[in-house]
Amino acid sequence: METTTLQAEVRASRGKGPARRLRAEGKIPGVFYGPGVQPTPLTLSPKELTQALRGERGRNVVFKLSVDGKDELAMVKDLTTDPVTQELLHIDLYRILEDKVLEVNVPFHTTGRAAGVVQGGVLNVTRRTLPLRTTPANIPVSIDADITHLDLKGTISVEDIEFPEGVECTLRPKLTLAIILEPRKATAAEEAEDAAAAAPAAEGAAVPADDADKATS
Image (cartoon, rainbow, N blue to C red; front, top):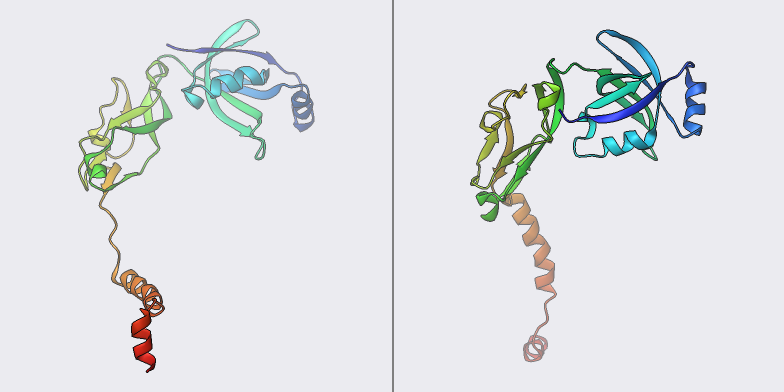
């Protein structure tokens, strides 16, 4: 199983004041909790965390959390960022077990250019992430679906996706994930508006000089 090592220290003080002081020192306050462990306040390196969270797995990265010489498997349960700078302010790490199933949200991507899009249709993807149930070792980076074969009105549903072994999607099998919409047609009202907008231009069109003379004679 692919893991990212994360060093942490147990912090003795809690509360907003100590947390602010930690951030002023360039460190991140956090907490580690989960089955079989007492909630433990931590001090972590923002550089290690930021690098891991910006990787291809994002929040689904599995950490090998090293605290006081003991290693635990953990994943991000929650995090707080500054709304303006997006700076990481606090993180909750949840203990996981290698053989226990957990629920994660994984990015959903379409690949290829649909035949219906070539014909003028529009691709509409209804879900950007998929909720999955699997063990830590089997968490996929993403779920990708080839849409090259889709014609106009063609769809990809949950049941059309070939998920990796040991991975289950918790959505309804018939739920549409992507559809090729037909080109939008103008309504009668829109056509009338277009005609009305064109009328003043036609009224103000240039008239040949000879015809203008005849009109005034």
